Every structure is written in structure tokens, then in C-alpha cells.
Figure 1: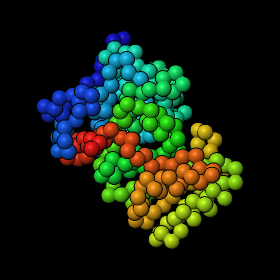
Figure 2 (figure 1 turned 120 degrees about the vertical axis):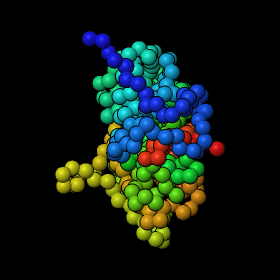
Figure 3 (figure 1 turned 135 degrees about the vertical axis):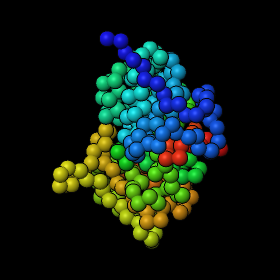
Length: 273
């Protein structure tokens, strides 16, 4: 049976974006009003996949938005539009999905330089700093996206925030299980006195009685900020990482090259200043 290669969305007269050179912040119209948040995610993901060229080493993100990118890459591989692609997955879940759609996989040991990573984000601030990893894959995501020449973030407009941590959702911190209560206490001390701050070990299961385990068999502590992180982000990052027992946190500072934002009014691309 002949495979029919799906076409990208036609966004007016906009040309492709070679070398991540995107237009400015002016939204580019969608062909029709999307009907759901998931449709917005799909549109953003497909726009990012337009940047993928044959022969690239790709960082493959994790999460509901990144799934659309994986599916699109798989479609283009089956059609022959893309070839000689190597993907490096940021989680076991992504690894399984990528294999199911026919994306050849490798790792950073064999490919220490990644041409392009595509991933979603939980929050994006005006400076393109991110919160990622609420799904628990923050360590592998940061390793792979930090090794990337270009890192393109794909989101719907609900992920845009004035400051990190102000959406009411958590900023995750991956910690080792050994003496996790001590590490949790140290994290609480860092932000003692901040209005509305809370830190909790992430639990899972039907009754939320078992600690959530990352792909690295570590735990996650979720940090909550009533008004977002008001202190200098780099200082906060350093303070968290200096705590013994902390593996990594979910603030991705200065890593994003571009952010593709799909909203009901169109697609906007913000580039790193």
C-alpha cells in the first residue's frame, strides 16, 4: 500500500525557517480556528518539525506536545521526505513512542552533539526561561537539550507566564531517595519566609501512597510558589544545586533557542535575544 505523506499546515505565505531564523513576534494566522488545546499543540509541533533536515541528530522531547512532533517525524520518515535521522529520547516513554513510529534511536555516548532538540515546556517566561519536567523527565531532558546546538520549544499560549512558578503548578526538583526527608527539609529552608511557598514529595498510585520514581529511579520534590519565583533565577538555581541530595531542578535557564507558540490568533515565534 502506498503511503500518503501528510502535508504541513499552510500558514498564509510564510516561508520555512532555515537555520532557526524566525520572523518576529507578530502572530502568523492559522488556516482555521483550532478547536482544542491539543490541536494548538499539534500545530506548534508540526512547525518545529519543519526545521528537521535529513541526516540530523535530534533530541526527542517528552510530553503531550512532543508526541505530536514524534508522530510527524515518523510520518515524514515513512514517506521518504526525511532519512538518515537519529533520535535521542529524553525518557523511556519517548523511547517507546519513537520506536513505535519508526524513528531510529541512539544516545549521547555515541552522539554527544545534537543538531536540534524539540520539546514542550510547562512554563515559558518573557526571557525564554522554562519550567520543564513536571512529567518527571527533567534530568534527561536537560542533558540532551543542553547538548543541542539548537533547542526549539513548542507550546500553546497557556504556557506563557510573567515569571517562572507563577502558574500555580510546581517547579520540580529531582532528588536521590536516600534520606529524602532531609533533602526536602533543606529545600524548605531555602525558601523559608516566602509567602505561599510549599514543597512536597510527589506521590503516585491510586491512593498516592508511593513516591513517584523518575526514569533514573529518583524521587521528585515539587516546589510551589504563590507568586512565582521573585528572586534572581540563576542564584536560586545555584542554591538548589548546592544541596547534597539534589540531582537536578526543572528550571531551564538560557537553553531555549526559540519558542513556537500556537494560539487561537495564530502562531508566534520568539527567538533568544
